[in-house]
Every structure is written in C-alpha cells, then in structure tokens.
Length: 478
Image (cartoon, rainbow, N blue to C red; front, side, top):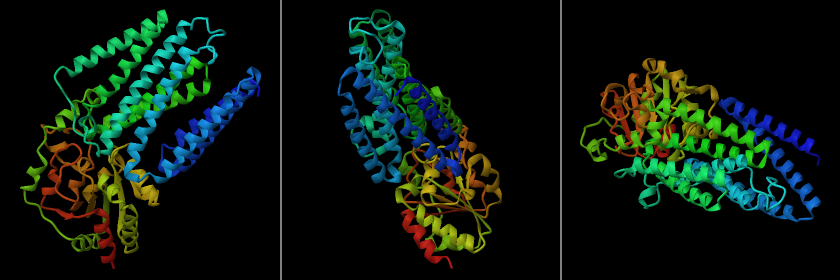
C-alpha cells in the first residue's frame, strides 16, 4: 500500500466524517449521518491496518497480530455494550466511551515518549524527540488524562448507583477548591513546558499525574443539572486529545477526526450553556451546581396542596382536546414508556387530535437524549419540535402532557429572579389551557428545585410509573 493511496483513503474517510456530522444535525438525516460515520471509520481502520501490515513486512515484525487482536477485543466489547445498553444508560455509555478515548491518547503519548522511533517520530532511539513533537505529546497526553478521569467521575454521577461521594449527583465542594484547581493547572502547564524544552521524562510523568487529578477536581463540583454540558464538554476534550496525538504521529486522519470532534463538541457545549442561560466557565467552575443545591428540599414540596387525578381523567382531557403538546423528560426514559406513548399518540391522532412533541435542548441527561428516545419508538419526525420552534404554540394548546420532565418546564426560570435557574430558557408549558403532569412523586428535579408548574390551578398531577399510566390511557381512549 503506497503512501499516496493511504493519503487518498484517509481523505475519503475524512469526507465521510464531515458528512456524518452534517447528517447528525437533523433527525431526518441522522441515519444517513450514522452510515457515513461508520463507513468513514471502517475505511480509516482498514487503511491503518494495511499500513501497519506494510510497515511490519518491511521491518520483519509481527505487530499486525496485536492490532488484529485489539480490533477483535474492542469491536466485540463495543458490539456487546451497544446491544445491551438501555436507553436510560446511554449517557453513562457516552461518558465511558469518552474516558476510553482519553486513556487511549495517554497510552499512545506514553508509547511515543518511550519509543519515539517506533512511532516514526525519530529515526533512531538515541535521537532526541523534536521540541514541536514534545509539545504535541504534552498537550495530547494532558487533555487525554483530564478527559479520562473527568469522564469516570461523570459516569459515576450519571449512573447514580455508587455510594462513593465523588460519584453523587450533588456538587462536591470544599474551601479553596478553585485556588487548588488554579495551582494544579499552572503546575501541569509548567511541567509540560519543562518536558517540551528539556525532554525530561520525570516532568512528563508528573504532568500526567497532575492532569489525572485535575480531571477529577474539575468535574466533582459540577451539579447533576449541568451534566448534559459536561457530557458535550468531555466529548470536545476527547477530540482535542486525539488531534494532539495525531500531530505527534503525523497522522492526518487523527488530526482531522479529532478536530471535527473537538470543534463540534465545543459548539454543542456552547449551545447547551445558552439553553441553560449559563456561561461555559460558570458551569466548569461548578457555580450552577452549587447554587442549585441551595434550592428547597424535596420534602418541602410534599406539604403544598396539588390537584391530582387518574389516568382516566387525563385521557378524558386529552380525547376532548383539539391540540396536545407532549413534553418528554428523563422519567419517560426511566420507565421505557416511549413505545406506549407512540401508541397513545396514534390513537389521539386517529381521533382527530393534533399532537406535537416539544424537546428542550438539555432534557434528559445528555444532548439529544429525548430525540433518540422518540426515534427508537419510530415517532414521526414531523411531530417532534425543538424549543425555539414550538414555544409560541403553548399558549394556543388545549392540553400539555408533561411526562417525567421537571426543570425544563419550571416557570421559576421566568418569574423568580432569585431562582438558581433564573433566565434559563424553558418550554413554556405553563401557558397552556390545561396541564397534565405525570411523575412518580413530588420529588424535585435534577437541579434540586421545587417546580411551581405543579401547583397551578390548571395543572393536574397523575402519579405513577409513566409506562403504566400511559398504558392505562391507551386502554381508555376510545
């Protein structure tokens, strides 16, 4: 395999990745985007395997065997996880994948520092690594280490099943935390620059250790409500780590793919922050998480009177409405009720009711969580609308059905300037003529805040598991 052919195939793979991002920008083209992404990755992998085989034959080494074993192990593990993962566990899976990308970048950087001749950085083992390559290795390894340890903490916070305090959804804060982060950050940069200009392995090792610690300290003060931003941010980090290593290895495929992931993740993080009315730096410093923690306790909402009803009551309201807007939230994913919801929607539409779905940018626990959930149930794309496109319609809607959503429909964001979520753009469900809210209990949302929507005179609470409640509604619809 000639180098010209390798370059051409990498270029084709890069074009596929660009087309993948373009396709994933809209639900109607997402499958095509996924196809281009898989095609591009397949071309990149096969090209790399061919290149390694060619180099191995020239150098009389058997390195291709290890590569194939790695592909089989990694491909099998990925296939098994993708097949078994539940929709509610998708955020944890994404965080896990980000951690693996970061760790891979760290391992490659360590190998390049210890055996630069094997990576094609130098001709002989005795030759010093060029200064530019050392800088690239420092950046790639540092970002990769931060991505790995930060993603591990994000995984724990998203799963919510570990008792270790660092893995709890609530922010973990202590006196002098930001100063410590600043000191460690400056020390990490200083050690990285020492390695860059001197090539001392000890500086590289210490820099890596501090970067791993930094990843933990950056994520632990961030509250659960900000986790969608954290997921997209770590996605960006993993891309920049891959790009940095790509420069060191002079691999155009890694550079292009890493840059695409890094830049798209950064843009997505900005979109998420804008949807929460927070600055990117405020989220990273844990300011939002800390403020949200000061909200009312869950128990306080139990003492306020609410109007409650049954699934039959909700069905009566839905069946007699001309227009219905459904707001899905994480509770819908937990109950795995998306298929039952689609059946309910089909019955309502058959009876002449206009039904639309309203999606908030940070609904669920990762960007696009609700879109994926509805796509899995094959909900028609023309029924699904983003917040900016549907907010103006809530005032004319006869009924809004809120399923497991909380913070994204909390009117306090608009009515209470002292609220921790003040100014956050929300789905304006409170403007509808009638509001039906399905929740298991009156527990607060991920931000830890009470929701004034539940106490409006036109709101009816229907308590219970979303799947069971919706299935009862399906049976009651004539």
